[in-house]
Length: 54
Ligand SMILES: [Zn+2]
Image (cartoon, rainbow, N blue to C red; front, side, top):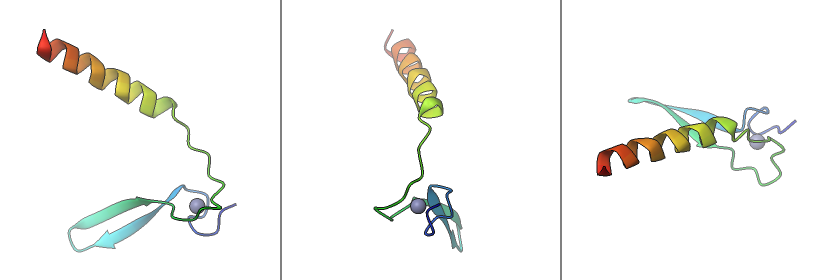
């Protein structure tokens, strides 16, 4: 498991204004990104754009 992000794929950095999520900077990070959610989100965004331009 990646020791930099503890296998979470990124680091939660606390600021005074809130928490910022940074992708793991470790080039040896073995976290596997599951893109299925991202693809769904992108498809949804594309759909919204089509409706706006229609
Ligand atoms: Zn990592």
